[in-house]
Image 1 (spheres, rainbow, N blue to C red):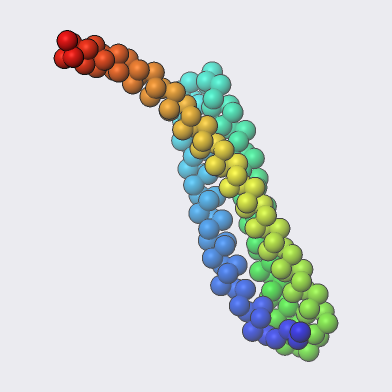
Image 2 (tube, one colour; image 1 turned 90 degrees about the vertical axis):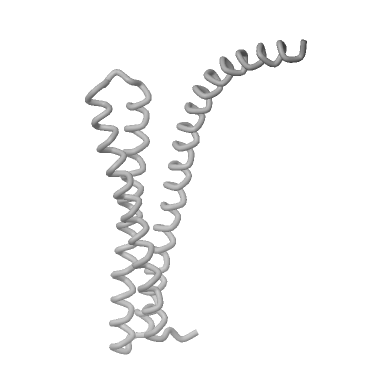
Length: 152
C-alpha cells in the first residue's frame, strides 16, 4: 500500500478531537482537585480525602501522558506529510507507523484513566448508597409500623 499525503491529513481531525477530549478531562480533574483542596483545608484529618488525592494525582499523570503522546502523534503526522511532500516515501511510512503507535499508546492510557475514574466514582456511589440505606431503613421502620396498624 502506498501512503498518500491525504492519509496522515485524515488523522488531524481525529487527533484534534482526542486532544480536546483529553483537555476537557484535565480541566475536570483540575476542578476536582481545587474543590478537594478547599475541603482538605477545612478538615485535613479526613482519610477519604487523602485517598482521593492519591487517585487524582495518578489520574493527572495519566492525562498528562495521554496529551503528551497525542501531541507527539500529531507532530509525527506533520513530519510524515512533509516527508511525503518531499518524496521520501520510505521514511514517511516509518514516521506514519510511529505516529499511529503514539496514538495507540495515548488511547491505551486513556482507557486506563477511564477505568480508574469509573472505579473512583463507584466508590463514591457506594458511600452514598450506604448512607442512604441507613436513612431509609429508619424510615422503613416507621412506615412498617403504620402499615401494621392499617392491617389490624
